[in-house]
Amino acid sequence: MNALLSVRDLTLGFYGAQILRGVDFSIREGTITGLIGPNGAGKSTLFNAISGLYRPNGGKVMLAGDDVTGLKPHLLVRRGLVRTFQLARGFPKLSVFQHLMLYGLDQPGEGLAAALFTSPAARRREQELAEKALNTARRLRLSHVVDNPVTALSGGQKKLVEIGRALMADPRLILLDEPMAGVNPSLADEIAEHLVALNGDGITVCLIEHDMALIKRLCDPVVVLAEGKTLVEGNFDEVAADPEVQEAYLGTRR
Image 1 (cartoon, rainbow, N blue to C red):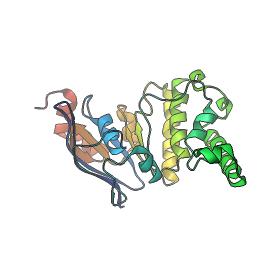
Image 2 (image 1 turned 30 degrees about the vertical axis):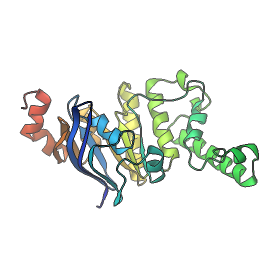
Image 3 (image 1 turned 180 degrees about the vertical axis):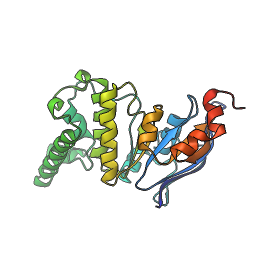
Image 4 (image 1 turned 90 degrees about the vertical axis):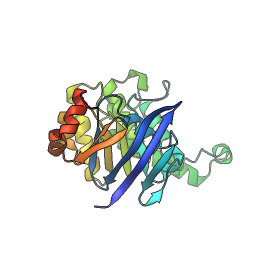
């Protein structure tokens, strides 16, 4: 399998504090890759650097063979790289349906003229996006709350909306930042099932997660970060048996 995403010697610091110290790893197309490590290892910062929220100080991010280092998030989305956030974000007054619609590509109302003078093509695109939003809600079992404001949803349902918004952008690769955090076990299992199904449909997935049982169940390979650097990469059993990984998690590594 070819590498869909490659990160090479990525560095990033803030006000003299170095967070990423030369991260190296690849995500093979068609995989569910797990990104794990102790708190403070730099996992979310790495996602921010890959997805264009932060510009790295050094190193490269390659997507499908193209150098996309520091590219703006909306341009990365156009190329098929979409990410979710650990804390589900949204607009409190908008419904689930409206949130999904916002993330559809090629919105006919994005230009002033198109918004003021709706063309038949714009109306057709609007209808296409509406159908896609409803199908996405149905797929994620959100149809019964599709008209509810996001503020009325449970934590797990908000996580599903995050995934749904990513799907609306036709992703090739989704970066998921703790998609099961704060979610009750039954809904966490449901989210895991959705990720396996999405991967089966050809979407490559990389997720940050602290639940090792879920990582073992879902992910191959697993990449371990510690102190802002890649520590080891392999399948779950190989990673779990590595002495450096054990020391990093136990807090005895020097």
